Image (cartoon, rainbow, N blue to C red):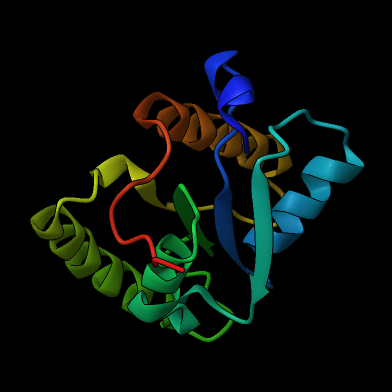
Length: 146
């Protein structure tokens, strides 16, 4: 992006969303089918379970130029794989503390629970995450030099 478009306020954050196949991805699909409006800055990556999202995936997304990351899974107790979302929640809590330690703003990485029937909730979360990341501006930490 050139300096002219940045100065005009045209910057849009790039947000990678790792969504559980069984709940959150279906919720995002419902949001689209129901025509709920949410920012186009969200790039969705469909994963089998939020428990399969390793901290390395999140760090790689940030290193590769993402301004924010959203991880979303099934509500506690509703995981298709029984306890995958509990593993995800535990990993996420540790990763958040690590990212704060290395100087990454806490609002750049978000975790939420969205079920397949919560399309409107997905649109609301996507909008809130995008606004939080937009206020922080472009990511400067963990960027890979090319």
